[in-house]
Image 1 (tube, rainbow, N blue to C red):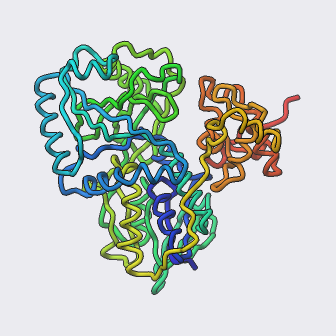
Image 2 (spheres, helix red, strand yellow):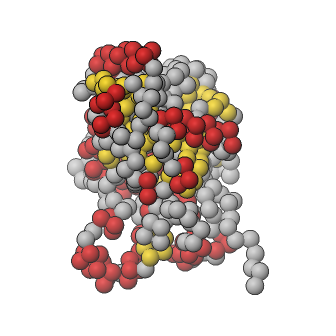
Length: 476
């Protein structure tokens, strides 16, 4: 029996789990996939929004501004890269330029600081690779970038280090309320009991709520396709560049990432739940729009494409509330953009204002808020690296040549909470396979390391989701 059960291992669930682990509560997270950060948190723009876009008075506006204010210290504690690079909403016509003044005023009402309108000359001075057709922009210097899946991994890992439990491959089959507690059963007949459920299931949030008896909202999916450019294009743009937003979102962007790539996207297509195939049309659309923004962009340097599905709900705002029909069920649903930015603030509200009114929890004196960065080795100077290599020679063996990731870093990813068990799990933690060859050279060796460290056969190793085996049979 747990005090609180979190359903969903994305960035929202991770931040909630970490917040819960600060208290003397028994807490558990269940995730239907074989690893955390496998949903929208896996395929995300990674933008920490300043907060000018959300409708005044909405939960999006409230949590965006609060979460934005928390992000720098939050990521520093967790050892996650965060960069305050600033953002520009670029206007290409007089009408769009006039609309930027409305956005600026909305941002001011939301509490966003330092917003200003740049003219064409000011814009070209700070972003020389922008199109000459740009006539001005709304500049938000406080906006930033972060790695979404690393934030989810770090929050969950830190929560586990502070006593939280994680159960993977647990896909909910039923939720039953028995008096003061819930019984949650998986498709393979496992059962978990909890006094409170926090529904952070992303695209599955409606399904989870319905299982528990709450039919008060609907969740739908939008697919976002992306292109990623090689690190040799680092510095081509320094700020996140947006077109004027539409009703479907903030549109296709051109932005640096915290790891030195350039990311382009996303599209916004209505799809069935979690349909994440890329399309020729979608990727062409991204290229065409990116060329409008930055004509000299080298699309020949694209190293991969991918897609993710993000949730939105029929209320057109975040749902962060205790169910009105099922006591003890807390829904965090429809958390679309700016959900990543809002996540720390949403978690704080959920725990302090919703959970602690129903279960008694005292703040732990021994809570440790810090986590060693997954990329700590790369940040060391040569002397410190050599000292580690003397103690652990595996840190002296390069496995991923593109990203210069060592065997020692891969082994650590397999052993540190939440433990990587798949090729993609290692990739998300330490970037082995994220470079130009996309794992073409290092994947077989990574597979062998995972098998060795877990006393498994290479036949048992998955690329990503359960059943995505790499090796089928011995041929020689």
